Length: 484
View 1 (cartoon, rainbow, N blue to C red):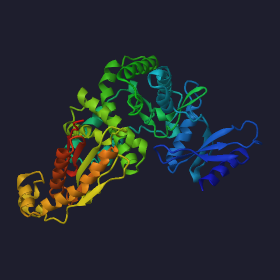
View 2: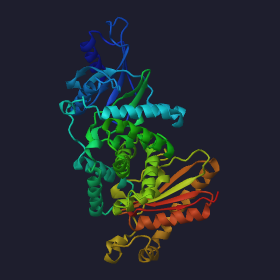
View 3: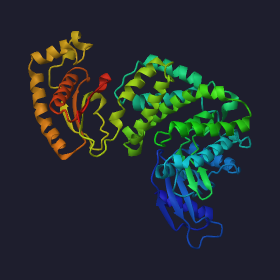
View 4: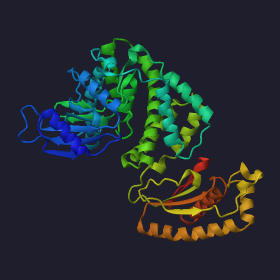
């Protein structure tokens, strides 16, 4: 259907039908992109190659088109030109700037080899952010960076990453931390205010023969300039070293100071960790939704890098003023290995879970699609009795309750008898990942007891393997390290 819409728009815009329309790989958004090639008899001035974009959000489409027209008048930076727009179809045609992004170049050549290019990118970013000739209000841009927007991002993190990871925060305390974080994030001065790209990262910078071209700025608005430089320098998979980040930050600050002519070093040092924290939490929410929910591989692959950024912020004390956020962040950082792919030959990792069926099955990030799933709900439930409700399967009274009836021991023995042959086989064949999960109603008593016993049994019998235990609903994680 979209091919027909694109061809109709092309015909309306240029008077001829395109020679070829080819769908391009998708990115993180719901927008779809198509490479459109001109026919041999195209009128003079029609570009040989263009890009057609189809987006389902009319306001984002209009904002991109309006901003592209405003930004397109500058020679200090480069953005796509929009040739035609069919609002009823959510389709617009824009200029083609090749297939290589800055992210592709960073991966191919390495960050250090691209430092000069990245410096040029940041100088162009400053020019774009502080361009007084751009009519942001006329383009439809408001000051979209406010407390409501910040809370959207922080709750995105809470509901799409933190809770799916099995961590239950103190909701009231966490919201208090979010309020404090928002207050600090909004305390920037006019000198550090301008156009905020919002998703300024290497994937949104194309490299054509004339230099970098900025794309996908439809999420932008008025806001703090530092948010963008943080998004760029601390992009999880960009691979910038600490030294390179500092040098590039100096390039950015120097370019900004030349335009604003104000010494902002104190304010920048104060706010930089705040925006780093805010951006890290925002992208973790995106990675949770796009990766863990929609199962898009490159978002899952970005999670370890984002958690590394979070670990650095914790180490630097940037999270100290937010005690509940600090507590849950430390738990998340301790889970980083769960999201880290194991290279071939790394040895076997067995992940053992307890979970609540009410909250769904545990995710598998190894690419194997899961493993053993044992249903503990057939056992008598200690959670039905008041004296056990606040306890877990790790507490002695619950352990005694389950073991006195004998059914727990029989269940565990049967489960072990099923799992151990697979562990033997996986070790022998050099496999890297195996998942074993125990579920019950609340993920508190029976499944916790069984998962704990399974992990301990496997760790004792297979010291050459790494056994990782997750009591998902309890937020407890333990690793029995390999002896290899």
